[in-house]
Length: 288
Image 1 (cartoon, rainbow, N blue to C red):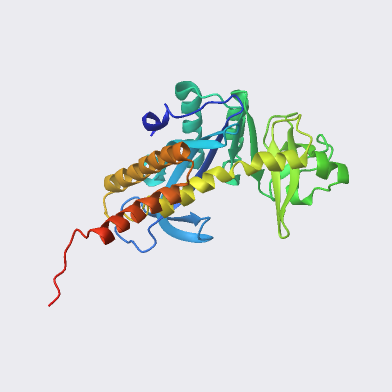
Image 2 (image 1 turned 180 degrees about the vertical axis):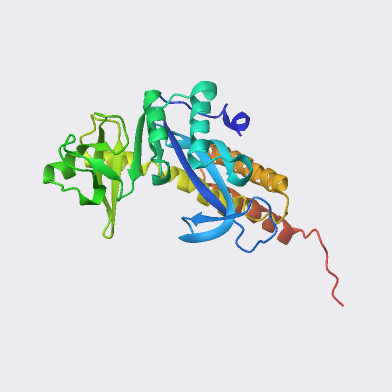
């Protein structure tokens, strides 16, 4: 994956790394290797499928992004959980790919102590939502830990965030917590180690960049046929997923070059074919 995109990437010191996972739907399979029951954010329920972790690099100055790494989730074989895969990809970006970036954006699943501390050790910033039942302390140890949703918020706190200590983090360690109303029935709690951040609106803008990886997952499923392989062997499934990622990378490169979307490019191929066939069919029919 990296070899196919590294020469196309436009690096930026203000770049982002974004991590997330998607489930390649195999809900009607019973014999395909590497398929396991897991939560699908797309289906909003547990389904059978193959988990794929992805990492993208975003240049906010050009508004472009590139898929630079991915992993297959199969803990029964390799014993690695979600955070292990993300830590491997993060380490690889810093020590081998050497891409400049300033912040890491990730989902609630990855807001774990080891990963957040790892990002801090590398001197990078993170923005990630945390669960509403996460235990925190805002009293410097005077009071007992309480859940995030039990915190009280003044008008100033809502605008500027508040400093808190996450349970099991080193003593005296503080992060900034923001309460963001995303939808009328949905509130997100965003934790960041950027203690200079004092704007809830700016925090919402930072988190909005994470939508890029959802765009990748949607395009993979709608354009490349990543879910279409019905072969039973895990190796063939891995090869198919890898080919789909490379197809996406090639289409994205062409989309940036032509100023079109991936959907327009794919539809254009079909349009050209239909025009050619209607003008001069490759298969001639004889009518009695």
